[in-house]
Image 1: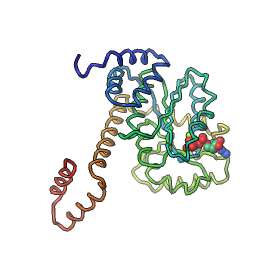
Image 2: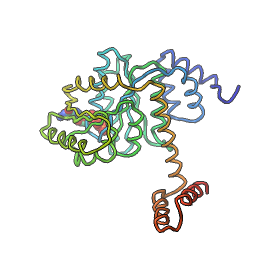
Image 3: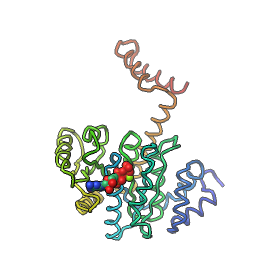
Image 4: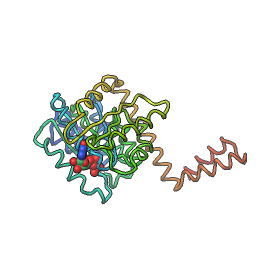
Length: 314
Ligand SMILES: Nc1nc2c(ncn2[C@@H]2O[C@H](COP(=O)(O)OP(=O)(O)OP(=O)(O)O)[C@@H](O)[C@H]2O)c(=O)[nH]1
Ligand SMILES: [Mg+2]
């Protein structure tokens, strides 16, 4: 057996996964979440079976209504005859420790439905970052023939932005009453949105927030077209418009191979950044120092690059 051939055990799991066995999907997601050689072998075995699952990311601050909206979106997709897998990233902070239980309850309408599969991904203990695990999970659903994969992540930091970037279509939601909302959304997350949702539109402050986001979008240049929609996730109001907007964007998506290549490229750059961060305790400070030296003409840019790589390989 050559190194690239999948292990026999992994192949049979892959076969069962591709055949659509639910237990195999659960097992595969566990294997992929753990990572390592088994995960790589499984990914290799399922690679020829990847189809065209659409990945929709829902990202937003804690309590914005992501799970409620995802639950309503799942119902909408099921009504349209599409199967939906959900990967919910468990915010590991002790403050939101109850989130997953709450999410389970909110999703409980779908537990008896064979066309829905909900899996939470714990963010604790993923040294290489969560995005590779989430991307692998997406591939498992895809190989098993699922139509839509939803990624639910809390939009708080860089890693969440990375996870959201795995998605083909990014829905960034926010809601009034959560604090310094528009400001919080400007920090990186606004740029990645295909669709901005102001949820809890039943609250009076929703219109002001919508105007604030419109203003923020208007001044950001060189961006793709971003839609702004209002929803009330608890009643389903605005859900149809959201599903339509998502569908409209699905129709203009590049071919699956290009999407997967783009995903793979991002994974490599995240891994590279993580590797830099591991080598240099304070990469920003190191680059700042090099920049100072460059500015004072002590070194030229080539020398700066040489020193940077030398520091990495120390
Ligand atoms: N009034 C109102 N409440 C809503 C709406 N959508 C969600 N909620 C409520 O807001 C709370 C938080 O909703 P979740 O769906 O758990 O929010 P989340 O973004 O998934 O939260 P985390 O997973 O903890 O980050 C719940 O009590 C929901 O019932 C809405 O449109 N209007
Ligand atoms: Mg949630």
